[in-house]
Length: 398
Image 1 (tube, one colour):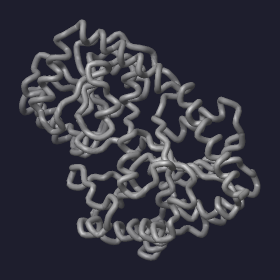
Image 2 (cartoon, one colour):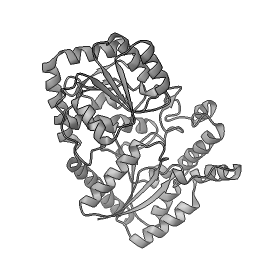
Image 3 (cartoon, one colour):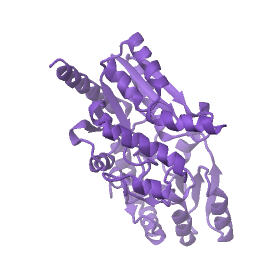
Image 4 (tube, one colour):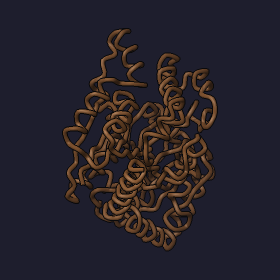
């Protein structure tokens, strides 16, 4: 099969899970013998040095004539069987869907975030979940300057969404959507997307990390140190956990204040900063459990898959997609979001019961083998492609 993948990379200074997922999927298709072409843009190339260039970028967010032209040329040159979009914001733009329509090729779009129903793409405001614009007016986003805390930036995205809602672009020009979880699919359906157009296919790991033994006397957090990630709740909970070390892998805007908090309260917390993938797998695999204390709607955290692949149980907040990915009593336990007392209680209960911990290690690894391997994911992806192509040609031939 000839497959054209389209993706707008975020800035290299802010590595993203969706960039990693895109690379994984490209490698998966190539390793299975498909001819893969790519249409890529990189936010590192964005020049916002002048007002005119910022205005041009804002207009191109809704319609990039350059993307339409370049993608049309690439489609005519490569003649793909299907085009699969990951991220089109901000440089590719929805004009790329029109290039596919005009060149008569079916389209699949993966929904890595909530960009098509929420101007900031996160369903997040003031570090808390927000659905004020889902399925209704986008005025709240403008009122609160939800993207970059900027009215011009928020206005550009709002115009993009409104224009293509009016044109019915997202229903007519995208043949099938791939949501990462049932929760994400539910938010999009609430936002007006058609249930029959959405398939659910999770993220996966291209390469299996070695299963750990969980012999380390510590627990671990891996991720960005930001308010919505729940790290403040995590550090607060550790004021009653002096006998269990916590290793924190990652960096972010709260790192300095969290290090000061840990030092001031003499907490058993070690900040390791940015770590290589190999180091993450080693630390997670030998930990008692991985903690994901998020207070927003995560997409599908890659670190959760890595924990499962390492056979490491997960203690997560009971929110959004995490509530369904983490199986209570099978692969981990859950606590009330933003509640440090409940978090400390659940970690203590889990780590104190070695038999239960061992059973959950097996459960986490079993879930990984059943649902999140490259082989399982490939089967689901190719099925989606075949059904999309068949439906597209049946529809266009009538």
